Amino acid sequence: MNSAAWHARIHCGHEVGAGFLITARRVLTCAHVVRAGGLDAVTVVFPHARELGEVPASVVAHGGWAGGLTDPGDVAVLELDRDVPLAPAGFAPPEAAYTEPRPRLVAYGFPAGYDEGTLAEYRAVSGQLIAGEWLELVAWQGHGQPIVAGFSGAAATLPDGRVVGMVTSASEVPDVRKGRMLPLDVLARHWPELGELVPTPGHRTDVLRELYELLRSAPGAPDCDPNRLYVDAVGAFGPPLPAGGFTTLQAAAAYVQWEVPDPAAMDRFAERLRELVGAGPAVTPATPLAKATTAAQSAQGAQGTQDTKVARMSPPWAPVVVEIDHSGAGPDQVTVEVSAYRDGQRRPVGTRRLPRSGVRSYVQRRIDEAVAHLDPDAEELVTFVLPREWLNEAVAHWECGADDSTPLGCAYPLVVTDRARHRSNRLRHQLRKKWQKLDAGRPAPVHRVECGSQERPPSLRKRLWDGDAGLAGFAVPPTAAREHFEIGLTVPVPVLLWSRTGCPAGEHGEPRCAGAGHGRGGYEDPRRAWSGPRDPAAAGTATVARPRAEAAAPCPGTAFLDQLAAAVAEVPPAELPRHILSLRVTADAADEPDRHWARDLQLLWDDPRCFPEPAASLRSPVD
Image 1 (cartoon, rainbow, N blue to C red):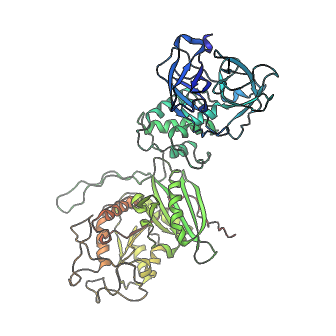
Image 2 (cartoon, one colour; image 1 turned 45 degrees about the horizontal axis):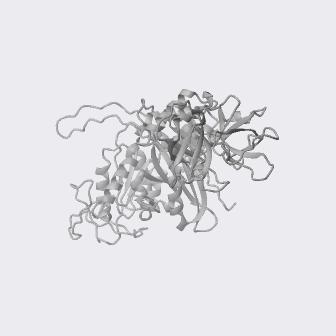
Image 3 (cartoon, rainbow, N blue to C red; image 1 turned 120 degrees about the vertical axis):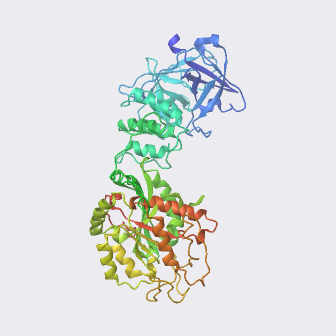
């Protein structure tokens, strides 16, 4: 009868099995039936349409079956060498296979002596999967045709002819009439394109159809990261990303379709993918940091007047936070926690107690994992929350991973902040108010703390308060000016910048310019000497060494502050992480990277609105 014309007999080498037509040119069967398909021809015969003859076919998709009887993924998709004029099989919802009362399931197979085919009647024992893969079948009656060789790949159908699964194996125990089948949702896991054909309760047919059309057009689209699309679709309280993530968009879509209980997740997945492939207008989600600034300011004058400033937006940062604290297990032991922020919620990625020597490799692995949890619209912001004595650590120079030598500071906008400051309610409150002023988008002048400054710390505190400072620059690293640096950390200045190597002590005896003298109190030699002042005309390029005997040359710390002030003069504080990334990339690409003034630039950038949850102490694994 015409309604059953989609049943197929598969022949490959010495194997004979069954299959069923799912489109005008594709047939689904078991991988073990066509295991010799690489050497022997595969032919397909439709018993109810013998006039089509033997139709050559090739294997175009494979479920990953490894060859064993109990190995998962025993699925193969065949492509015929031509379209056939037959109606393909129809599908029922997956749960129809085991809904009470258990329905009779019919399989059309081709055991020895039955080239035209024969039928076997079975039912599912339960909806419980065996090893997460198979439904178990038992004979509908104690007599009749058992499932034997030749039934592999047969469609298991309801009495109305709709398919609910595919037969894969039978019991080898004599007189035991049992078998196994792959239900439709498991088949779709191994071959995601099947999901377009199978009705899914809770999901609209038009959304599914559009989604799979988008999946076919998405491979060339930028930014279609399946892991980030999944996280975006399921939301803050949805199922976490499965271990290992997804390697394809199709796999992510199938997981949302079959494993995520919220039907709206599929709608969000389709909508977001539609935006990314350019099939419709992109809708940018609102974010607390995306605040419009003032309109263009006064027009440009004659000479010496300021250029018109265009309104700017604070970037919608998506932080990946690496928080390090002393574990209490010993002086060399620290607790490291990596997490991602999304929709105002903190998503932990991993926590571990480590010796200091093991921190870098652990962080490299976890940052890459955390990025998959971020909103696709937002820009990554890697934030190291560090104990005060770690603030000068060269985290921007750490490589992205064992197989990627790109410095983290050249791959992401990367900032550091002080752990005590990050947890201070007073400073978080005051910093929020400061950022409300800075959101106007105007650049903030650099409040300089010169090399060898004799300014008393209380005077510096007053200067930063009275000046309503948004940005402070230090000519030396924190170890060389501890008291001044601690003032910067305890006053609500959102941005601190310094050179990790600073100005080497004893390199040039007496001060050579006003404000550039060197005191000795509390000064510790940095690890590398700054190699010379930079030619002011060479902005954005490598530094130019000048003879140290030149009397008029400023000290390296003063030269660093000069270069810094020029580099950030037109940059609003909210955009500094991105701008410093650009400077780091420029320095790394210079002919002599170690001589570039921005080579060791460290940015402490602190906007509490990026981290809306109250800060809390790390759980110590020694408890």
